[in-house]
Length: 219
Image 1 (cartoon, rainbow, N blue to C red):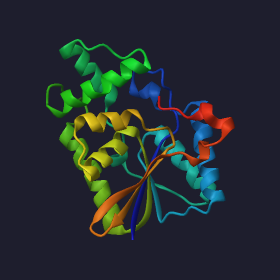
Image 2 (tube, one colour; image 1 turned 180 degrees about the vertical axis):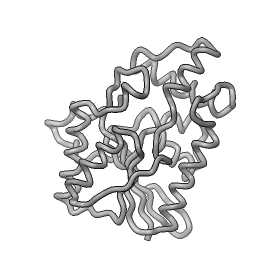
Image 3 (cartoon, rainbow, N blue to C red; image 1 turned 30 degrees about the vertical axis):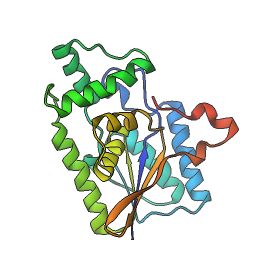
Image 4 (cartoon, rainbow, N blue to C red; image 1 turned 120 degrees about the vertical axis):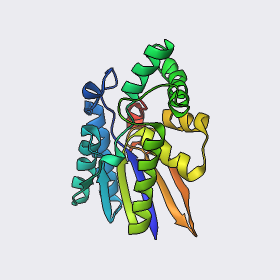
């Protein structure tokens, strides 16, 4: 049996314009992670492995969930997010595309960044599009080889890339999925025959309460 559950980190410092400033959970983000951990513990959700990326927002989210389940977790830098800030700066310098200043601007900005990156029209200080895709493929392969239930605590770009790989998404669909990933949402793929099939997308049962509707966040 192979089950991979990708979990996005809690809300980070969304007003930041660089990775260092962004990479910390907001007060709401920490609460989202705590609620997710409590929900999983109360509903006896168990995993054979929990692995997070090495970014602070990912580790802190994993710690909250793993702590509630009474288990530990590992870290793997292959689950780290793409360098979106670096890519955005490159796009601004080379194509005069301004940083997004609103949600509407961000929705338009993401496909521009991903398309230019994919087509080799901008440089990333960190890695190429192909290198990013390759490391996410490797994490999926690791989970398939090991078997069992694994939770990967990561970021929206990683989750959307996994969906691109497993569902054959083109760049516009990849970008659209990335934009709509809730903080601390679950995205589950289960092995059906020889294929990992999507079983759950953007699941947030821990936030599905009247008094937590304001905690449903993307950005």
